[in-house]
Image 1: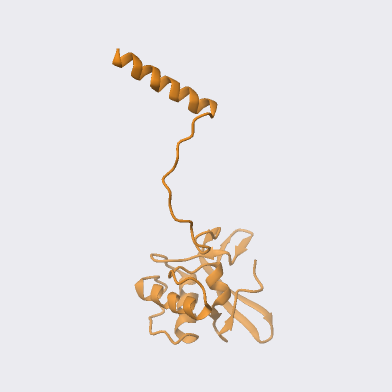
Image 2 (image 1 turned 180 degrees about the vertical axis):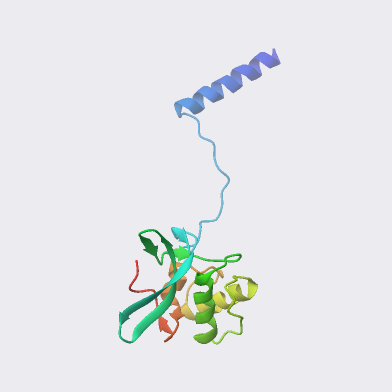
Length: 148
C-alpha cells in the first residue's frame, strides 16, 4: 500500500510540475555585486583617446564587432586586461606589484585599494563600477569613458 501511495505522490508532483502549478524554491543566496552582474569577462585591453590629452588603456571584452568595457576580471584571470589593471595599480596607485598579466592575490589586494580610493565596494573584483573609478595609464586619468 505504501508503494502505491508513493507512486501516486510522485506522479502527482510530476504532473503539477508539468502544469506549472508546483514550484521548487531554490536555495537563497546573496545578491551578486554590481561587478559580478557585468555582461562579459574581460579578455583584452583597448587604448581609448577622447581628446589629445585623454588617453587610457582600459580592460575590455571584445569579440568580432563587440567591444565593451562592461566586463569583469578577478582571481585566476590572465591576459592583457589584467596587464592594464596592474599597470594602473602600480603607476597610478603606487601599488607594489609585478605587471605580469596574472590576476592573483596581490592584484586582488591592489584592486581593493583602487576600490577603496574610489569609494566603491571592496571585493577585489574588477568590473564596470570599479572601472569608472579607476585611473588608467598612461596619464592616470579616471574612468572608462569613450567606450560602451
